[in-house]
Amino acid sequence: MGDRITRTLVEQAWDELEKTIMYYNGRPIGTIAARDPDIAALNYDQCFIRDFFPSALLFLIEGRPDIVRHFLEETLKLQPKTGQLECLKPSRGLLPASFKIATIIGGEYLKPDFGDHAIGRVAPADAGLWWVLLLRAYVISTQDTALVQRSDFQEGIRLVLELCLVTRFDMYPMVLVPDGASMIDRRMGLYGHPLDIQSLFYAALRTSLELLLPIPENQTILQAARNRLGPLQQHLRDNYWIDTDRLNVIYRFQVEEYGEEALNQFNIYSDSIPFYRLAKWVPEAGGYLAGNLGPSQLDCRFFAIGNLMAIIAGLTNEHQSHWILNLIELRWADLVGNMPMKLCYPALEDRDWQIVTGADPKNRPWSYHNGGSWPVLLWMLTAAARKMNRAELGHHAIAIAERRLLQDQWPEYYDGPDARLIGKEARKYQTWTIAGYLLAKEFIANPDHLKMITFEAQEAEDWQDPARTPGSYSPIAPEYQGSKS
Image (cartoon, rainbow, N blue to C red; front, side, top):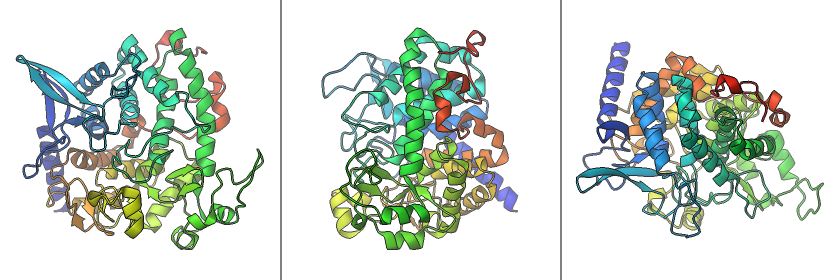
């Protein structure tokens, strides 16, 4: 009986996913964000780059790569290729958060949104990174090396990374981004170096060493990627990491230190950290990467995307990866509850909520980005668990999701500390909720699919020597194999 119900659920999920496919000039090009018949579409009738990622992986697994290829080709055409000094124009290398199909004089064209139409008017820092990772997944799945070797694709990868590596008022190896520039697209106190973007940036840098040909045009980016990977990895593993031992070190930090030997390099004041709550919440055999780090700031909230992507991308070492999963398992009621899983934990409440979010009613405590639960994270949780040979966590999470998703009509998110309430403003028939469930099922059934998105953990010193640069897959042409840049 249970297997039959599961098969029916999968079949219905696929039926719903098929209904979301967009067609541009007669060809499939992506999926709309949601098709809720009861709420105004706003921009949910558009295709978002980050939203399409799990759907694209499913199409690759199902042997339908054309839709992914068309998506990659057409979105690449939307990327500005020349410098822009105007503040109201998208920067060179930026990829749009979303696009829609518009018509003019009987013909179709793609109309991108670079943040100029979005709530808050924030440009997407993560769209280009997801695009690069999807390109890698496409090439690994199809072996279509000719596509990535095309000059326009080589240029597109370069421009995305140049945008992240650009000189700025910053002395850290991370990417400096504004609040609202990722999936958490509303003000949540993430300005600076949020973990979600750093994990994606790390994965994109690793991808560049696999996808960029060692030709003269790419030399600067290839060397910059090698120079950045080691410091970025070490900085995140050391300074973002929180466990009981690390808490004891931070608790006894001295402040107002000066010079290269300072231990408290970011001048963190212990009064800004809820040590007693954290000491009780973080298990002895668990830990996680903090949400953000900057001058006098250590954001101790748990952010799911950044931590799960850190495991998937090999940013965390084996010990840290297992301890993140230990934390999720031992704090299951807090982080998963009745629907996988919390985007952010704990929620900002009371005066903190008013100040940090600007009293955003959609981000009220335990709702939406502020402690809401997002079923799309099911695929990331399952992928991270499967990679670390902890498939039982994925099975458990999928079983929880299957009890509700269909009857609740595939909502965008859930509200409440235990995720019992369908999100107050959640769209029904949310595409990446559907895709996240189906993709998690595929990863459980066949872990070989993980090769499209995972990287093995490496040590910082490996990145400087091209001969030792690791990589389980390289799509470059045979004449380039083994070449040093």
